[in-house]
View (spheres, rainbow, N blue to C red):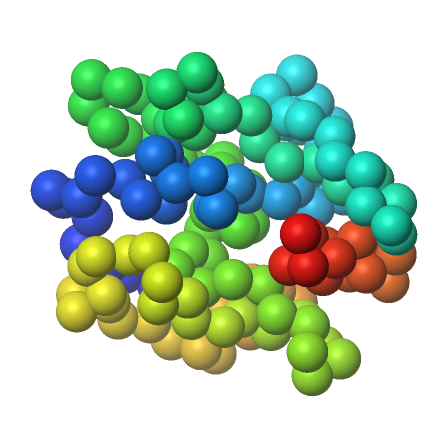
Length: 136
């Protein structure tokens, strides 16, 4: 689906980047409840994963720089360096070229990404709250 060589990366997606904090889907909120923060948007509340004091994701192991929940990570983590995109009125993924220093190693299959997105539900109020985060 999405393959990228992360070895040697300073974890721009998992830490040290205040602009990248995974937003949880409604279906993920309960599972990550004790590791998340609520954000109030003009369109309702939305939950994001916590970060440690050093700016790293709560699930990034500081010594190995590896994700401790990799097989059960949130959808936004699975998709990175793609971001959820609803501009066409349907759930989609758009490549985010801003932060990943290893994009030259990226390979992906959009059909597999689309199939993954179809497994999830995106209520309209959640989409509006999610999109309002871009405005902040």
